[in-house]
Each structure stands twice: as C-alpha cells, then as structure tokens.
Length: 416
Image (cartoon, rainbow, N blue to C red; front, side, top):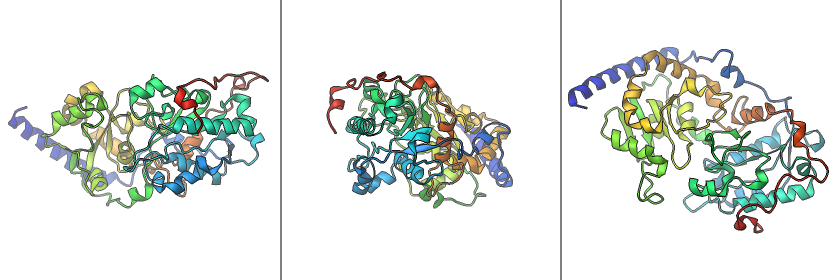
C-alpha cells in the first residue's frame, strides 16, 4: 500500500477514534441490552433451580495442593479452586446427597506448576482416576449413573485431554472415566476430540482484584486503534514456525508490524491493562489453544474483542451475545485485518461499545471473591440448571456398566 493511501487511512482512523471517544463518553452511562435474549439470560438466578452435593475428598486432591503452591490461586486455570470455594458457601449446596441434582468432585488437576508457573498436565489423568475410584467406592451415587449427574472443572489447555500440545491431546483423548460426566472447561472448539457434547465452556481465570485496580476514568479517549501484546512465534516449542497458533499470530506480525494503526508487540508493559482501555479493538488470536485470558480482559475493559480462532466455542455462548459485542475474523483472512476493521461502520462500533459497557457482560467473565449475582460462578450454575432434569436413561440398571475402567494409555492407569 503506497504512502498516500496510508496517510488517508490514518486520517480516517484518527477521525474515527476521536469520534468514538466523544460518543463513548456520551453513552458511557447508558449501557445497552440485547432485548429479550442474552441480556435476560445473563441475569438468571440459579438459586432454587438446582441443588449440588460437594464431595468431601481428602485434602491431597485439592486444598493441600494450594497450600503447597499458592500460585495456583492466580494462574489462568484457577477456576477449579474458586469454583470449589464458591460451592462450599453457595445456597445451592445441599449436605443431603439424596436430594442433589448434581454432584461436584473437587480435584485441582492444574495445581502442579513448573518454576515458571506453567501447569504440568502429566499427572492429571492419574490424579483424576484416583479421585473417581475413591468416589465410586465410598459413595454409591457415582455408580447409579457412572458420572452422568456429576461435574468436574477441567481448565487445562485442552480440557480433560490433559495435554498442552494439541496433537498429543488429540491422541490421548478425554479421560475415559469422564465420558459420561459434565465437564466445565475453558477449552472450546467445535468438532474437536477434547470437547464433548454437553460441556460448559467458561472463561479463563483473571484475578478480579488485579483487574479492578487498573481501571481508568471511563471518559479516557480510545486513541489506539488495534492493540495486542503477546507471542507471535513460539520458537522453543515450534522452532520451524507455522504450527503455533496455526500461523495466525505470525501472520499478524508479518503483515502489520509496521502498520501505524496496529500497536502490537511481544513486550508486556506495566500499562497493559490501561492500554486496553485506551484501545478500540483488542486482538484475541488463538495460541496453542483457541482461548486466552485476553478475551476476558477485552470484555472487562470495553475493548472490542477481535476473535481469530476458527471454530472456537466461546464462554457461556448461550448467555453472552458474542456476535453482537465482538468481531470474528477467519484465520485465513488475517492478512486483510486492516481492511476488515477499518470498514466497520462507526455506528456498529458504537453499539458494540455500549453493549460492552453493560456491567452484566463484565461480571459474567469474572470469578470474584466474594461472588456476585450474574458472575461466572452463577453462569456455570445456570448452565447446569438448564440441563435439568436428567434424562431417565442416564440411570443404570443394577449391575449395568457403561465405562471401561481399564481404557486409556498405560501410564494413566498407574496409581497416583
């Protein structure tokens, strides 16, 4: 693109950004709702619609792991910890398993971190099998359905496939003993081995206190057109390139590193959260998995998420109007990203910003302490409530078995 065209495009975008900032200020107190659909679903109250029994497992499966490594409370997989804590105090909890609609098995399978804070999934299958064997031997409720009325939080990169590399996750598949259970997981991709039907896709954990500590005045102009901070290449795990993010991030860098409309870098500044609040569009490309915390951060900070991840299943898709608040760009269309974003009409951008300004949108993406109505905890409960009542076919006849307890890789069958 020649220099004259760039100058004209820059002029247009600075005019657009200025216009957005002024109108954004004008409408900041008037958040818009999706009438009659997602806006109402977001505010559903799950209390009274279901009862959950929480198994009291030995601490080696959960709380003892956090005491050993408190970093488990702040990494992006921490939903498994906070969902457990929430349910222990929730009004939907019942101490009488006979009246429970759902049974929760609190296992912290991601709380095994490297010195750099990355979760190691290699022991997770054995740990999960151990917990399920204990539940099945100590309580009879598992055996009635072999887990069909039980749910687990499995927030690994590829959920209950328990691996951070997709090829190996696909080869492993979902742990066989979880085939009938409902999985609450961050991973979501249509037609994928690691997402089974009936799973509830949730946002990754982002520390709410840290986020709210970086809020800037709502009338701050959004002077950055497109913003992204993160890896474009993962040389350590993908030395030849092209496999990481299916080449989408590399394409962003190669095509737009010198584009003045794009503020993109591998550097992660101290003003990262503030910069997102000064941006119109925030790129949310896939990495090794299709999801990342950027999606949460973009929604909370009112930055229109540009979702680059083919076939992604987004968090709480039955409650959050993603098509209305985000922009979806196919991975193969990344080279045209500048044209796609600059061609979006101003009124469309303004409406997306007004919808993002709705507090219920932000609340649904977070796991606050203490919990608040409409937050991610309550969206999970709503998802479970909408699956009730259980079909009578999930209850097994006496002596009937549906799961193969000896299936899976040999290493997974070893004691934990």
